[in-house]
Image (cartoon, rainbow, N blue to C red; front, side, top):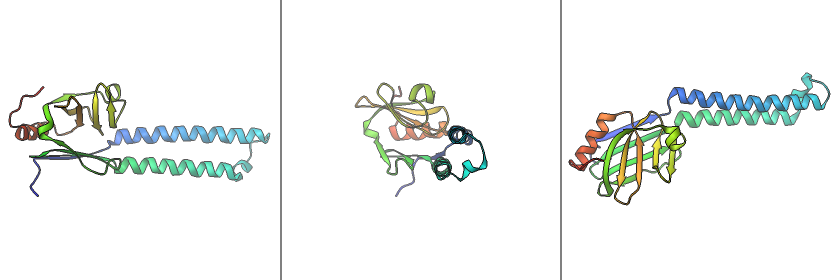
Length: 178
């Protein structure tokens, strides 16, 4: 197997992971607080006995399990991009385990561009918007925009701007960029 011209692996940024954990924690704490108050007032007292209620303990354990799952998924998520003479390969682990191949012969044009993940695509991840096309975004605001011969668009987020353009120039052999 030949060495790829470009290889990049991106992970979820610490800042975004902290935001996700904070939002999940606040949401869960709000639910638990509501549950605690509801149980306490329904018994006409707020005592330590509320914590011995089996339903309350199930909710607490469920919240902790969901929080742990969010943390684990965010910490193992990664966007992998590989470019070789045959095409561009993309996968977003753990959501998409197989490589998706974008054939060089199917690419009409390409360019590096800045984008706004939330405004244009509704956030990070694998996004498919009718007007904007498909996007693979894990962090940052710069990506490789591909215009395919079939009219579709694909955006691949990158942190290695010069390296990805260099690899694309080599693969496309000076083909006009949009």
